[in-house]
Image 1 (cartoon, rainbow, N blue to C red):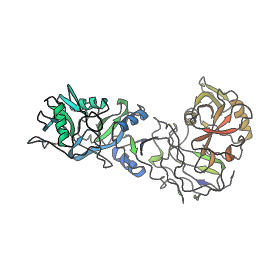
Image 2 (image 1 turned 45 degrees about the vertical axis):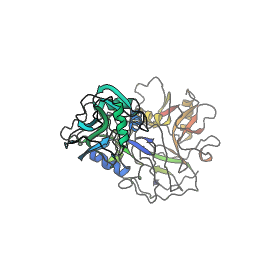
Image 3 (image 1 turned 90 degrees about the vertical axis):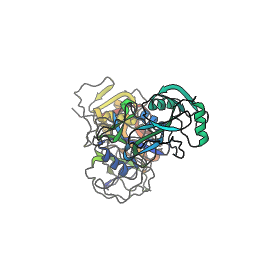
Image 4 (image 1 turned 45 degrees about the horizontal axis):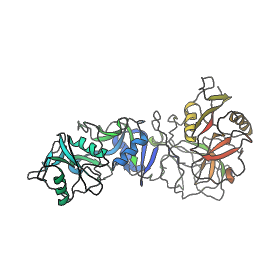
Length: 483
């Protein structure tokens, strides 16, 4: 282990804004309220753009992850200047048409396409009830004729409920096949017209509107997903401020007006948790050059609305690190927190004279929580209800923590100790200067760890420190005001 007097600033990235992977792209729920244009600018600077939704799988995973924890969030759909035809089945080219004479009509309004008994297409009010044809399977053979009459939108939902969609047509023989199954009726096909476009220029035709939306009221030119309504979409005024979903890998760590660094790694995750930490072990063979300047006050990126926090289901470290670490001591990070802190980074404090929950056992300013949580959940709980997960910086604190840990109902107890796998060191999650160590044999600087490892103390025995996967669920000890 190396501990020196050199102070520097390192941005540690740990996923805390909701972030998850769908195929080769990432969705990121950003817990900052912005207008649509502000949100678009933010996403373009930090990721690729506001989120484009390509298909039902994208949307279902987004809804499943976010659930109804967020009322509404901007996605990257906005009105354009041109009304265009699209196929409902995603990513289908407009390479074949079979319009009747005089069709389609040249009107700037929502419209849908139907096929008559002769196989010719005509434009129609989407609210008209008709029979319809769904794709039978992915290769467009075996089409499904549904005799029940529905509006175009309800017909689309019916087909999607069959893990399909309204039929799309690309060849004359496909058009004939649809005509043959339509029982000589006028039927809906999967062609629709609207003015909506994606912020990133994508031609995705996927739409997932709420009933009776969009209503095209004046100024309602931007779209939000309503997660308290199964993620269905609503057109809203772009000036409204709400949270938003970005898509794409993180471009870089923002350094302007935040930190002054000479070398900084590339990452694929966003700056999330506010840490003021002390390194407690490191590999001296690594090198990084960082200036010894304090972080300036962060911009809006670092001050999200912390009243409604959605915690990540995982934590990642500094991905694709190109710089390495050398002499290290007290290291400060200024970034965003998603663990119920106030916007200036101060945790909510609970004094000892307040009523403790049934699972809490207090000793001095230490509180044992006899409830099993992941490390992230434990840190969030401590920061919301007390100060933070406990930091052991002296032998005296170790002895007090050991006494508390003996009452735990789990074999280990979480501490405010975390490992960064790319820089290869352990640190406390707040500014704490100390050289005290109590690692179990083979742990600490002697150990080899994967990413996502955090520190715990043994509840019994010698009660030394060990590294465990952050996803394990353990009791934990919070530090609190002395009362």
